[in-house]
Amino acid sequence: MNFYDSEKMVDLLKPLGYELHNDGDDADIIVLNTCHIREKAVEKTYSELGRIRDQANLRKEKTGKKTIIAVAGCVAQAEGDQIMKRSPWVDIVVGPQSYQNLPELISKVDPIEKNKLISIDFPVIPKFDQLKSKITQRGPSAFLTIQEGCDKFCSFCVVPYTRGSEYSRSIYSIIDEAKKLIDAGVKEITLLGQNVNAWSSKGKDGKVWRLGSLIKELAKINELQFIRYTTSHPLDMDLELIEAHRDIEKLMPYLHLPLQSGSDNILKLMNRKHKVDDYLKIIEKVRNYIPNIAISGDFIIGFPGETDKDHDATIKIIKEVKFSQAYSFKYSVRPGTPAAVFFNQVDEQIKSSRLQEVQNILREQQFEFNKKSINSVIKVLILKNGKKVNQYLGRSPQNQSVYFNHEKENLIGSIINVKVSEAFQNSISGSIV
Ligand code: SAH
Ligand code: SF4
Image (cartoon, rainbow, N blue to C red; front, side, top):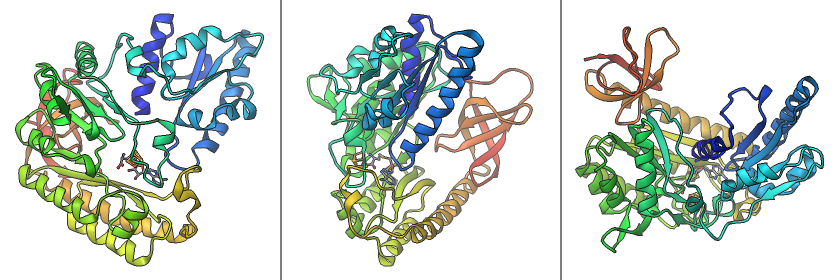
């Protein structure tokens, strides 16, 4: 989502005459876009700001020009004016719901008076209604945020505090943005949301639409070839979405559905509001409808109170579900969330060894999943060049990285068939058919 926000900020600043510069040494503005989901984000932000200060000072010495320094994202939201206190060289602090104000804030920066500009209120007019900027160049695959914020308040999570309450964009603004992305050369769109499948809005027919209907509508855009979405929540998985997977060819057979823990006790303490069995039933149903679907997930290891028995339950579920790939993280304390003050925090070493065990199994499962692709022919969208000469990297329908070689013409953005011949831990490779 930060990646999407960063692209939007670039779009917003283009009309002011700014261009994206990958190296900050001679930039007029440096925007540090931050994530707060796990620990260390705050300290990382401050140390990065120290580096940026040195960069800006050097530029000033060399050229006499001031570099405007802005901090955006969820650390900006959570820290607010603390950032100005600890790093007084920062000019702008802007939260994830107010970055549409960046052009105005930049215009107010006074190079001599050192005025400080902070914009972290949750706006009354939703951000998206004010983000009417033109879409500049994108690669073959782009993100499109359709839903933001969250009202679920899992006890470990900062999202409801930093991104605000749940909000769904209107169908019209989503379709409009999708069409603009297509005009900018995009072939694949990944719909984004903290809980993307909680999206709902009034449809063309006056009825309330959910994600499945939205995907059906988006699939009507001819040039749009591949549709994905992330991240889903088990409580918001409905039949309409599962049917959309079955019926809409453009919707890729990949579902990222976090479980967080395989223990009902822990799920309860996490305030997830569902049981392990509910998750298993969803997976069973999804696999009945779409047998080849790749299942991914998220796990938090070492949540306060997690016992060996709870951990074993997580291992058992992972073995039962067989993920194509999944993300796992050590629980990290987020100040201001309920779990931060739970008494029975788990020892760091225990967390680490449990995480290792989980990741070893997930790695094995990913390799096994990749091996199953050998000898199949898959439709691949070519995203970029690989590291080796004449090598290309694309994405398979089941969200695997696919490598192959090709000489002659540039294939980036093309859709081709690849016959898979080899499988690795994190990727598969083959040749064009
Ligand atoms: N809305 C999604 C997840 C969004 S946050 C859901 O509810 O499933 C993305 C992932 O970050 C989470 O799935 C979780 O696994 C991880 N995460 C969030 N807070 C965390 C914390 N305090 N410690 C460790 N991992 C965390
Ligand atoms: Fe965070 Fe997801 Fe829980 Fe919302 S549902 S609080 S985003 S983990």
